[in-house]
Image (tube, rainbow, N blue to C red; front, side, top):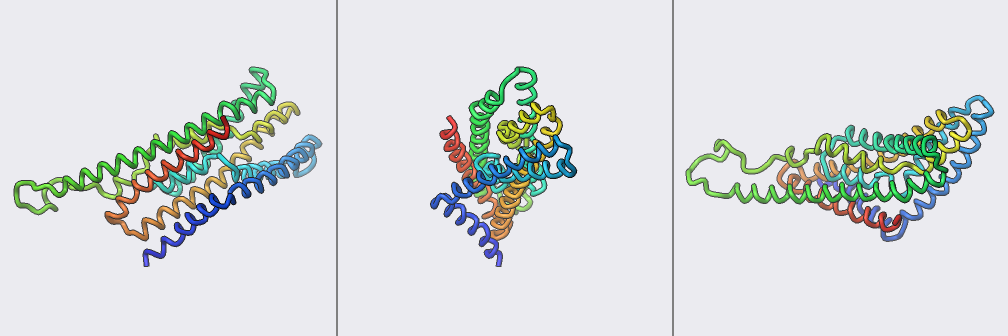
Length: 301
């Protein structure tokens, strides 16, 4: 009966493989880009309505910003691969991973706000200079950071596998005296809870920093426009709404990754197989994140 829980992970992996082979992910990205252009037009109209003081303009504006952030997140980047890979590789709780996903998206908003306030109001940069800084410096930095997190996951999973193999080898040694292993005073192998620890604050900060380094280009444009229109507080509110929209999609990825991981482990049971599988998944997820980051870095440099 437990094997039935493998159906969903198998379907998700199959769908991902199909998308990569057929190029479906590029079509989805193009579809999302089309919606982004529609929402950009809507943003311009809502800003004019705000400036004219039309009733309900604030609600419409924030709604358009949220929708823009959501559809913008469908495209490449925004930490989906990192959050999803980490959720599959480490037994982190759904609530914690969802919080990391949302806070990472809000971190992108903070980065955009700091960049615009510092560049536009202090350094006197133009919109082109701000966008160029985000795309030519901060985007590659974010991609490298995500790749390094993937490398860290792979190395940590490999180290866990090595320790497991050493402890299994040690469990078979002859103690030189006859006694019951259950009462010998020491353990011969780690428990599943030791293997699946999430890594604590260090992991959280690494994940959030890897995603938050890169500000959203749409948020930069919105902040610059509202600054020129003397509506910067409105632009900041819209930027936060965009980040929440981006976070909504990233949280959905977090939910899918946790469900995939738990379905796989439940199908195997909480035994030695599951204990050995977790670090293997971590190694594979880390390698996948590294490869995807390398491919993205090749596109932006």
